Every structure is written in structure tokens, then in C-alpha cells.
Amino acid sequence: MRNPYRSQKIAYAFLLLSTLLIVVPVGMIVVIIIQKGLPAMNWQFLSDIPRQGMRAGGIFPAIVGTLYLVTGAISFALPIGLLAAIYLSEYSRDNLLTRIIKLAIVNLAGVPSVVYGLFGLALFVIFFGFGASILSGSLTLGIMILPVIITTSREALESVPASFREVSLSLGASKWQTIRHIVLPNALPGILTGTILGLGRAAGETAPILFTVAAFYLPQLPDSIMDQVMALPYHLYVISTQVPNVDEKIRYGTALVLLAMVLFMNLIAIIIRHKFRKRKKW
Amino acid sequence: MRKIKETIIEKLILASGLASIFFVVLIFLFLIKEGLAVFQSVTPGAFLFGKSWYPISEPAQLGILPLILGSLLVTLGAAVISIPIGVGAAIYIAEIAPARIKDILKSGIELLAAIPSVVLGFIGMVTLVPLVKSLFHLPTGLTALSGSIMLAFMAMPTIVSIAEDALYSIPKNYKEGALALGATHWQAIWRVMLPAASSGILAAIMLGIGRVIGETMAVMMITGNAAVIPQSILVPVRTLTATIAAEMGEAVVGSEHYFALFAVGIVLFVISFGINVTADLFLHEKQSK
Image 1 (tube, rainbow over the protein chains, first blue to last red):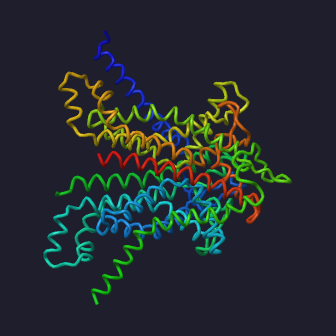
Image 2: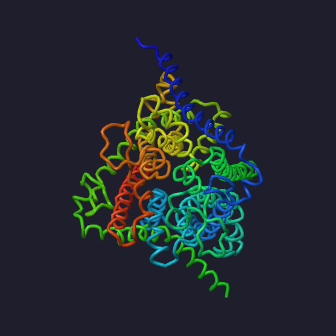
Image 3: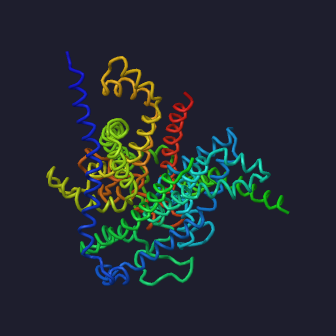
């Protein structure tokens, strides 16, 4: 007869192996990029424009472009996303409409990023006539990160105990006053986490900005939101596949800056969440 | 006065609540608006099952079968790799890992989810592609296999986190019951917990695969982009997503090619819609039990 304890051991070994097969390559990817990208890091690389057909110089315009895009995306997505989360957590009833809204959010999260690019091209660039611009790109990215912000904010709002609301209402506060002064402040760390995760996602995405804003090579900074910009992820794509003979150092350096930006935001989100969990009094 | 202000705010809240529905519908409408025009020059059958994709030849040949097969092949490969590893890791994290290591593993997997796809594509280009090339003695390492491996890594975070949630949300007494009857921990996991979590795990797999089908940048960078019907997993292929990303820049607005790329977008939208609705049904079924 088979020994159940031996099969347990074998099974556990395989499960451990699966986990290592995920975690070890992730660690290796990060280490490789840091190791090979660090030598490229200096002030000139971060503050200079790309030179000699992007084979020398720095990546400053791409960094600035990404910062503009991320700022634009969040200033569009945060108000709508937060209000939508308030609707779902405080106002919605358990009915068909709510079910459809939730399904729409799930679908919005699942739409392929390149389809967002098509949509942005058709609606903002052509139909509204914004052209390829920061405005078009930010709005496209904003719609894309909406589900992230709604989902995390809603979780944060719903984790505020019902008794907080009841006390506030029983003291004569209106529903909105309760939300504004009791629920929102208590849910703030969670909302902040969601916002930062959304920022990270927007900073790293390439496909949605391909046809809506990203410039192949544009050494000056934008004057208005109707201008095109370079963006870090698109720049990495360009120097990896479209421009031959780019120094490896520059490619790794660009990858490192992008990765550092995204991971830094995620780190902040994790720290906020962690602190909040410790401080939580209920 | 305060009444009026609050009414306005509450209307805004309702409007934002409905925004998600509005955007999903808007995306679909604009894809339809730009994409359906392609069917003036090609029938839906010839579009979906046409064997050649030469959008800029005269006359243009707009058959997306090679692209659909390319996407399927890469996705299938990624599924074969990511499902056992992803579900295995989810079980390990949910059931076996000690509490302290559990947190580290979870953040490691969150980290993977956060890495931008263009960075993964870049890393795949410089590490995986040469490896595949020398391992199989191929003329190029830009193959469907390389794409599958890289995409498996993008599916895994989704699979692990949702499957882990599913395992975690099984009532404790299921497991305790099995253990009390003399089952080993592994027997309890395999015979009791996995079947109980099956709908959640299925949803996790579907959402992971949905992510793979929609992936664009990494795939475009490492699968070689040859729009021909693939004969094996060791040849270059081109996916639906990569086709849009690679060609839309050159397509003239209002041309046949432009419409055709939007029609490809419709196909992608419909696929992802189907996957997400089905996965949601599975997750819902779990909750209603």
C-alpha cells in the first residue's frame, strides 16, 4: 500500500518547487536589472536629452513625459474612481444595477491594454480631435486604471465598521456629512494605497500610449497638454527593438529607472498598508 | 442650502458609479464604429478564417487566422506552464508556508505583478531568447515558446493570488473534519480543499489566461512577429495584440488596414469580455454557496 506520509512529502516538495519557480526568477530579474543598470546611473543620464539617435545622452524627456502622463491619468481617475467607490460602498443596494456595475468594473480591468490604445485613438485623438497629446494619453490611461482605484477604495470604505456610521447618523449628521467626516478619513490609507497602485500601473503601461501620445524621439519638453511627449516604457521599447546598436548600458539603465519608479510606488503602497494595519483600532 | 449641495454631491456619486458601465459601452461602441467598416471589403468569414494577413499588399488580404492561431499557441503554452506552477504555489502559500515566509512570498509575487510588461519583454529579449535559440539550435530565439514562458510569468501573479483567496475562504471545518477522520494534511488538501475551492481556482486560471491573451508589449518583443500559420511552437508567431500595436502606427486613418486593426480589437474585446463574465460567474457561484 502507498504510504500517505511519503506521498505528502513528495507533494510538498513539488509545491515548494512551484513557488520557487516563481519567486526565484522574479528575484533574478530584479537583480540583473539593478546590477547591469546601475553603471549607467549618473546625473547626466537622468538629466540630459537623448543624443546621437538615442545611442548616447540621457532620458530626461522620457522621465518628464511619464510624470506628466501619470499626473494627468490620476487627476482624471481619482475623483471618478473615489466617487464610484463611495457609491458602491455607501449607496448601492444589492440589486441588478449594482451587479452590472461590478461586472463592468471587472470587464474594464480585463480589457487588453492595446484595446485601450485603440479606444483612445478613436475617441480622444480622432473623434474629439485632441490629436496625439498628453491629454489623449492621460485620459486613456485614466480610464484604464479606474478599476484599480475603484476596487481598492471600495475595500477601504467597506472596512470602516458600520457602527462608526450609525453613531454619526444618530448624532444628527446627514449621510454625506457622515461619509465626508467619518468614513473617508478612516478609509484614507486604503484609498491612498489604491491610488499609488494605479499610478504605478499607469507609469509602466506602453500599449495604451502607443498611438495616443508617445513620441519616438522628441528632445524638448512639452509646452502644453496638447503636445506629444516621450515616455519611459515606450522609450525602452524603442531602444530595445527599433534602434540598432544601442549600448546595453543605456537599455538596462532605462529599464532600471522605469522599474525603480514603479517599484518605489508599490513599496510606498505596501508601507502605508502595513502601518495602517498596525494602527487599526477596531 | 446644505440640502442642495448634498443633492448635487449625491448625483455626482451616482453618475460616477455608473461611469464604469458607460466606459465599457463606450469602448465597445467605438471599436464597432471603426471596426465594422472592414466588412465592406471582406466578409466576416473570410476575415476570421482567411489564411493570409497581408494588409498593405494590393489588393489587401485581411485574414486573421494566422494571428488567432498565434495568440492561441502562445496562450496555450503559457497556460501549460503557469497553471500547475501557479496553483501549486497558491496551495503552498495558503496551506504549507510558515506565517513569516508567507508574507515574503506574497510580496515577491506582488512584485512580479508590478513589473511593467515592457521590462519583462526586455529581460526576455536579452536572457530567454538567446537561451531558447542555443538550447534548440534554432535560427532565431524569437519564438512562440519564448513568448509562452514570458507570458506564463505574467499570468502567475493573477492565478496565485485569486487561487490563494479561494483556498483561504474555504470554511475551516472542512479541513478539520478531514484531519479528524485521519487524513494526512496533503490528503485533506487534495481530496477536500481543492474540490471545495474548484470554482475559485477555475476563475483564477481563466483570469490568468485572460491576462495572457491581452498582453501586448512583451509578446511583441519576443515572439518574432511573423504573421504565418505556425507549424510548431519553435517558430516565430504573431499575436492579435502585437499586430495592432505593431501596425496601427503605420495604418492610414480611414484605410482598410485601419478598419481591419479595429476589427481585430473587437475580436480581442469579445474574447476578454467572455472570459471575464465566465470567471465572474464562477466566483459568484462560490459566494452564493
